[in-house]
Length: 360
Length: 126
Image (cartoon, rainbow over all chains, first blue to last red):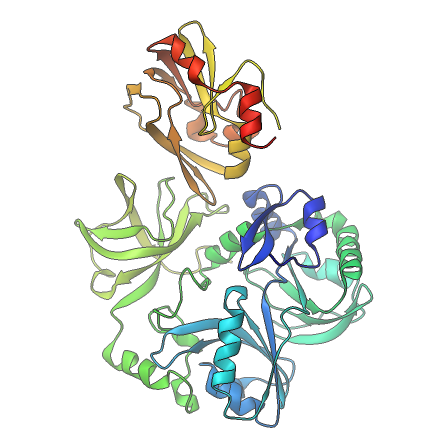
């Protein structure tokens, strides 16, 4: 099992550690609900060093990334970030990712931990552009500092004014370490993601500095549990739950990152066909008034007939009731009849709502 | 690990505290810790009896749901109604205010089949 540079810190804090994509990762420190609220109300820190980082270099780096991903890379300028996905020829999602443009000959791709090997193989397989594909996943640490007070905390230890706009990044020295500082996150809050290469000792020292300076904002460590409930309140997809190779970006509600007019890319023909014929099912957001939680895999029924399934569900700590994402047969999405989720021996009513669950 | 001495335990992490021919039932401190934030105790409101080793409801935590297995058999005489609004009592006070149900034991000797606190501690590697 792999450990991040912050493993000793997690142990010291008494975190509950689980195997996630081959890494021992903290799922919670004290309480998922408390950690969730700390991020919404002030500031929390996530160790997400398990994420994968792949650097693409070469004269045709742009052409390669444009062909590999579904969003339009030509919209990026140096220092900007884009949410995107890689699809296979059938339009199935291989992974969702962030694309960082360092410069015209260098891109930095951030991918899901569970997909690193698959993604890198896929990149090599499609490298007819002569680019260098450097898998730097094991070298990078990644901390996400998220919450309304994240800027104030980080400003105290970074040597550059943190005037970054959303989805922009720059290099800065924070706590004495050279970092790529990115105004991105998976929580819907003001937040930053810090990418850096360092040894365990320096990583631990950085963590301690961050928590010292964040003390007056009640900074909290937050685990993967809170990360999941925070992203779900915003309706952000989680790979492996809501999207995978059997789902296409259109039915997953990712039409906004699918730029079929940008030129050729892998999966374009299949996606065009989906757009032409219309989707058979759609990822929708649902709420329930009851306290039984809809969970991944539970069936959605209408008049006793199965018309969909839940892909993610939890109790929203902010709303106080269950929220869920799931695929529902297109024919029943606007139905006047009651949708229900089948939970053990009962059916719980669901209402389809618009995202995000939390209006900010 | 908090394990009170006068409680008996099942291998499924429920505890039983006997008082004459009645018993309180709850889940162990270890179990609540493993579950994490508990948000709902789903016990059938019309449940009359429980039978040893059979499920009598489930516990919803934020990250998982777990069946409740009856550690003993008996007639249900009370359900902890406070848990309706304060399910987190099972996290904060699993052996006290976080009790789940009270039963009248069908046969008080069945408690002898349960684990002592010491044995339970060994089972969970404490």
